[in-house]
Amino acid sequence: MKLSTKGRYAVTAMFDIALHHQSGPVSLSDIADRQGISLSYLEQLFTRLRQQGLVKSTRGPGGGYSLAVDSEQIAISDVIDAVDENVDATRCGGKADCQNHQRCLTHDLWENLSGEIRSYLSNISLAQAVSDLSVREVASRQDHKVHRVEFS
Image 1 (tube, rainbow, N blue to C red):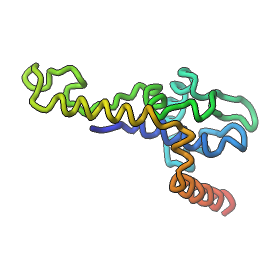
Image 2 (image 1 turned 90 degrees about the vertical axis):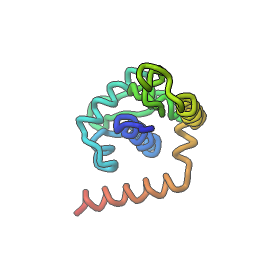
Image 3 (image 1 turned 30 degrees about the horizontal axis):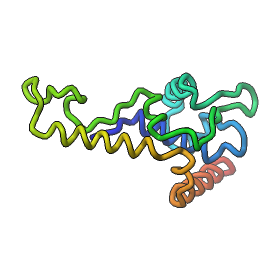
Image 4 (image 1 turned 45 degrees about the horizontal axis):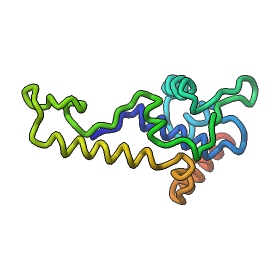
């Protein structure tokens, strides 16, 4: 089972916005600097996130992105779905044609795992995820690193 870069980066960027929203809209360049994600890749992801109603953009000086709804109302699975990511542990994409166009011996096992992962991600809100102490510690470290680079 593998979650692609697209899904991981989208979730990471949404964490970043949720952690920095108190200062107003968050620029994609700030997210790119803190998270080490290509700005052009973020632009592609945020087009999808905006289209799905998870973020809204503000133009002009001090502009950027903010959450379109409260972070309590955004499940991690919503973010993954918004960027057309599929979390699937089967080899066949859930089509049950894994071995010579037929169901393989372990298909149900991997399909059930996919369902458990989906359920897990559906039951964690963005607010819950970013309230974790270890997430906040990493965010603080990233903020200090970016500030040191800016003022050097």
